[in-house]
Length: 117
Length: 116
Figure (cartoon, each protein chain N blue to C red):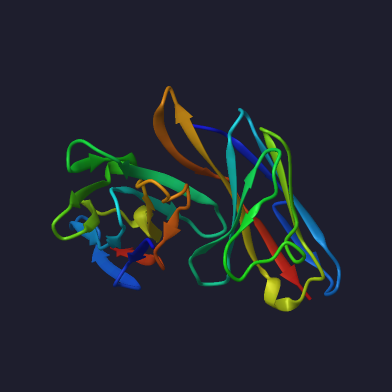
């Protein structure tokens, strides 16, 4: 399966500022996914990022708040903009890896634990 | 639309006893099903998946899950629980039908507590 390096692992940020989270994969992948896990809750998909095109956002998430970059097939960033305490969550990136045409499952980064004060 | 239900917020079991964590799903086409585990302050770890083939899927750490199409269930099981199995478990599904996309939908999670 793919190996994902996600950073920062955690951060404490002031409200009104922005934080960019990076996700690096050890192999080329078509799609990368960004999730949010609010305290004590499940994972919610924010958006799907394809290389060379704009990200596709899920209902309730907008590009102005969560801009995403996907400059190549191994890297993506998620920015949490104009942060408020409600943005305090764990943010995770994920990829789906195909292996020889077989679906090899989804791998997740270790997550970024964001606290907004 | 695809969805997953984990009806139990918490499951308590004694060490050495069998455990079951329940999951039911809803998809338009054929399901692609997963179980993940999350330990405190850690990311998600893959346990097992089902896409096709045998209904009983074996995964990591002695876990297994049984796919039941008629009951649209994918319950996670382990014959003998360990204290170290205590963690948060997530079931997830993806719809493999055309137009289902690559979106993975997660259940709300079940906290497993294994006690001595």
